Length: 89
Image 1 (cartoon, rainbow, N blue to C red):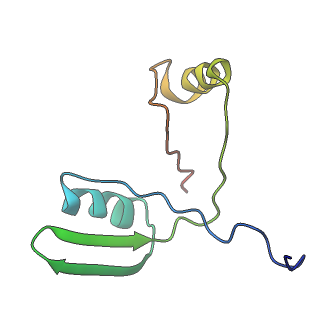
Image 2: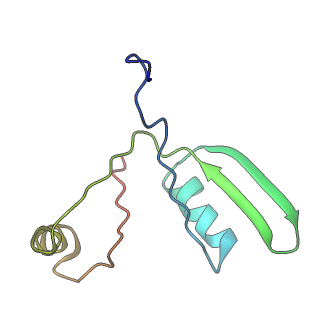
């Protein structure tokens, strides 16, 4: 049984593995302005920064529609099966 006042999905998390962790954090946090909610460092190379991405959507696209998106948003360059897109100010 679910509470009709609560949405069935409470959050969408996307985890990006970055070889250059510091550069990736600098880009998303400092250049795109995504606020850092929390960061953890367990020692060595075990680090994560959790950034606020605002409102999220999940788009399920057919291969044909993915090609249309690639034309509109990436000058026709094929994107991988999973793509991240950010609308920024």
